[in-house]
Picture 1 (cartoon, rainbow, N blue to C red):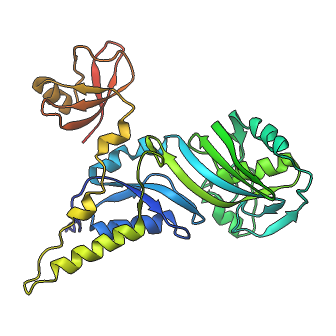
Picture 2 (picture 1 turned 60 degrees about the horizontal axis):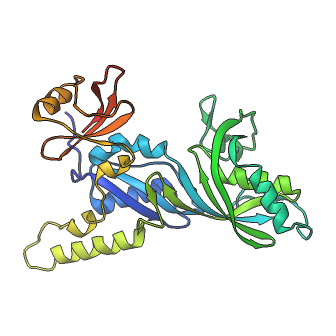
Length: 317
């Protein structure tokens, strides 16, 4: 007998501001419980050392989580020069130290310029990359080191915000798959003194950037949950918990795809597209992905323009 799923059927995206010291999965499970959600998932892990944006997708929105997994990322990182650690961040053991006295701001800027563009990056041993079915971090904890293959990544921007030896503060805009810890270690090696991440904050994922979008702290969600529960239990007759104040923080799932053109379909086109058929839509773009809406402006999902100009359903809700 199949067990019924517990939890609310809720959909949307929470731009969670993950606190320091919490794993991404622990943050996800906590938020899922606070929302009493039947289904939820995050879109790319943040180390416990890191704070900042961890988008949480609920319900139908999880179908579109790959768009955030594949999206560009933004970080603000504090790099401690002169110390190399086992994990390339402050959680590891210091394995080498070197003086930083002779390093100038100009030298740092020249080294940073070398990392702009497409570069090859070697995944760190303390990472979730798999080797013969095993996570590298598991092998690393066993004291093992295996050969890894460098991967191409893109560094779009690498700005020096603060220069106060032995520390630097950098702003990074990079492609998916970039390990900022490795970037910090490589910068330190190029400067001849080593370095590691002492603090890290993710400031943006895809269309969600901290400068123009508010990230919601976990503590705030906790407080709203407690207030909603207290209100439900305030009367003599126990009332269901009203999650409206929590749900108000959820963004519509089509905000993930704001970079894609919107396409409004006729009732007939929407019907056939829901059946999995490609449809011809007047004045549609000539290529790429499009956001699809029915005549009532309800979001249907994502379509792809075929070579013959028809719109093919790619991911529907």
